[in-house]
Amino acid sequence: MSAGVLTRGLPWPAPVLARAVPFAVFIGLMAAEPWLAGQLAGMIDPRWLYGIRATLVAGLLFVFWPSFTELTAARRPSRRQIWLAPAAGLLVLAIWLWLDSGVFVLGRSGSGFVPRAVDGGIDWPLALMRLAGSALVVPLMEELFWRSLVMRWLEEADFLAVDPARIGLRAVFLSSIAFGLEHSQWAAGILAGLVYGWLYLRSGNLWLAIAAHAVTNAGLGVWVLATGAWYFW
Image 1 (tube, rainbow, N blue to C red):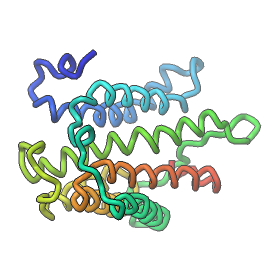
Image 2 (cartoon, helix red, strand yellow):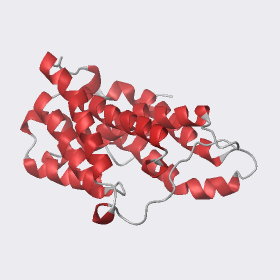
Image 3 (tube, rainbow, N blue to C red):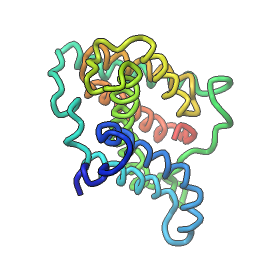
C-alpha cells in the first residue's frame, strides 16, 4: 500500500498526514489499550500490546517513508554536530531522571511497564520489545511529528518550505510545551523538547534530533532494567 492510497480524499495535505498519522495511531492505541486488554483477556499477555502498537507505527513510517524528504535528503552533519546528538541525548536523560517527582509530574506515577516473568525474573523478550519500541520507533515518530511538522508549521503553514535555521523562538517554545504536556513528566518533557528542537534548528538535520531522542530513550530503558524503576516505562 502506498502513502498516496492512505491519504487520498482526506482534507489535510499529504505531507501533514504522513507525519501526523503514525503519531495519532500510536497515541490512539495507547488510549485504547485498557479496553483492548479487556477484549483480548486470556488470548495474549496485554503487555505485548505495546509491541503490536510499535509494529503498526513502524509499518506506517515505512509506507510514508518517501514523503520524509527531511530524512531522505538530509544535509550531511559536521563531525562536531554528530557528537552533539549523543551528548544532547544524555543531557535529556539526566534531566528525565532528576525531574521525576513532585510538581514536575502530572498525576500519580503508576507501576509502569513491568516485564517480569512468573518467577520474578525479567522476561527478556518482553523487555527487549519494550526497549526496541521506545528507542527505535518512538524517536523517529515523535521527531517527525513534533519537530519536523509542528515546530515548522508554527513558523509557516507551508512547513516543508521552512528551513530549520529560520525557525523562531515562538515555534520552538510552543512546540516544546506541547511536547512536554504529552508526557506525565511535563517539566522534563518541555526541556527535552527544547534540547531536541535546538539540535534540529542548529544542525538543520532531523536525524540528529532523532539520534539524541533515541539515546535518551535507550539510556532510560537500560536504567529501568538495571534498577527496576518501572514507573519510567
